[in-house]
Length: 173
Length: 79
Image 1: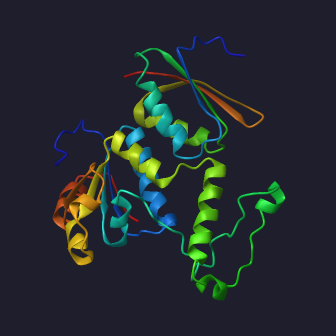
Image 2: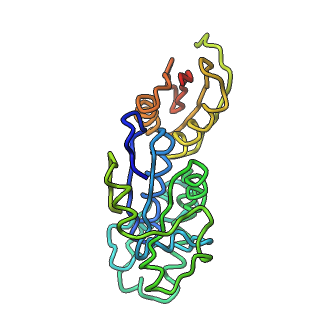
C-alpha cells in the first residue's frame, strides 16, 4: 500500500461519506478522472457513503432542506427545461416527492450527457480504482460483504490513513 | 484543415465530464506509441480538462481546434 518509489504515480485519496445522488457523483467523477490521468486512486466509503458500494446504486436526491437544488423538468422545449420551478419546501415532505425529484434529476443528467453513477463506478473498477468499504459502518447498519460489489475491499480508518499518508491529494466528500 | 495522419478516432459528442477524459485515456491505450488519436467533443469543459490530462499523462496535444462548439483534438501517444 505504501508509495515508496519516487517514480510512483500521483496518488488521490478520497473519503465518500454521503449517499444521496448529488454527493454520489463527486467521488466517482474525481476517482475516474484521476485514474484516467494515470494516478493511483483509492476511495474510502463510510457512513451513508457506504451504500454507494451496494450492487444496485439506489441514491436519491433530497430536495427537502436543500433550497439551492435547481428543480428542472427534463422534457419539453429548452426554455421550459431551463425553468427553475419554485417548489415550496413544505411540498417536498410529501411522501414520494424524493422519488419523483430523483427520477427528474436522473433524466436531466442523462439528457445532458452525464454518466449514471453505477456506470462511473463500473469504470472506476475497470481503471483500477481501489474501493474500500468501512467495516465499522457495516457493523453498525448490519450490512454484509455480499451486499457490496466484488470490486471492493473492506477496511477501517487505519487502512485508509496508511494509504492516504502517501497521497498527493486527499479529499473528504 | 489538418494534414495529421490519424490512427484512431474517438467521438465523445454529447458527453460531459469526466467522460471525455476517461474515454480518451482508454482509447490512447489501444494505439501504439507515436500514433495519433483524434478526439471529438462538444463539452465546453473539454479544452482545459484535456490540456490537464495531457500534462499529467505526457500524451501530447498535436493540434486542438474549435468550430461551432465542436472541439477536435489530436493526441499523440508518448508512453
